[in-house]
Structures are given as C-alpha cells and as structure tokens.
Length: 134
Image (cartoon, rainbow, N blue to C red; front, side):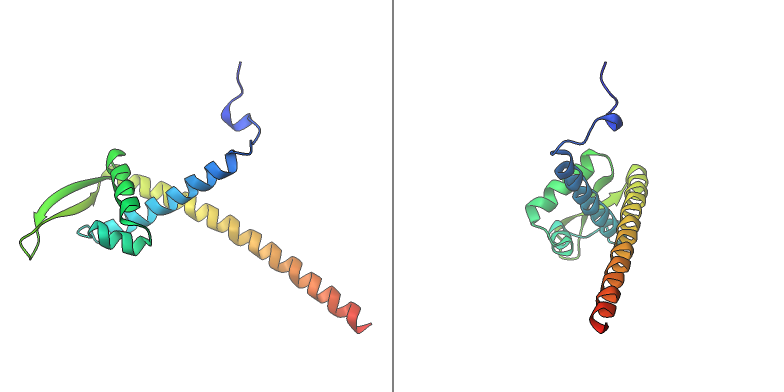
C-alpha cells in the first residue's frame, strides 16, 4: 500500500518541480490577464509584454489552447492581414481565478516572511546599537 502524495516526504527534486510549477502558474496568469484585456494581442507583442522569447510564448499559448483555457478566432486586421483573437473560455476564466488565488496566497506568505525577517533585523540592529553605546 502506498502513501498518499501529501504524506510522502519531500525529495530533493520536489522543490525544483514546485518552483517550475509556480513559474508556469505566474506565466499563465500573466498571459491570461493580458489576453483578457487585449484579445487581439499578437504572440510577438505578448512575448514582449511577458519578457520571454517568442518560442516560449508560442509554447505557452499552445498549452493554454490544449487545456481549453483560450480559443482562437481569425479576423482580418486593418492592414488586410489575417490575425487572431485569443479569447478566454469559461474554463480559462475559472483557471485564471484559481491561479490568481494561489498567487495571492503565495505572495501573502512571502509578505509575512518578509515582515518577520525585517522584525528580526531591526531587533539585531537595535541590540548591536545598544552594545556599541555601552
């Protein structure tokens, strides 16, 4: 009988995997936000806004499409070229809400850790200051 995933001890490979998952979540959230605000954004413009390569953007877009979070719609732009609209699906809107909640939870934990570190540093500086004055 195997242990449930939550009961398994952390292995050295768990942290890089979690870090990659967080990066993917962050990238997907940023992409979903940008596409929801501007569905006609080209992949090149999206890559520029995300600060990643065009190839990585294409990979991300394909993943979002494969997951059913966005759909593509063709249209002709003002230069009479074929262009695309990237529209969030209802599943994409739900996914964006879930990823946003995880992002917020993670940032709140980081904020609490920073506050604790600042408090420790202030106490250390204060103790050092009192020692030097003695």
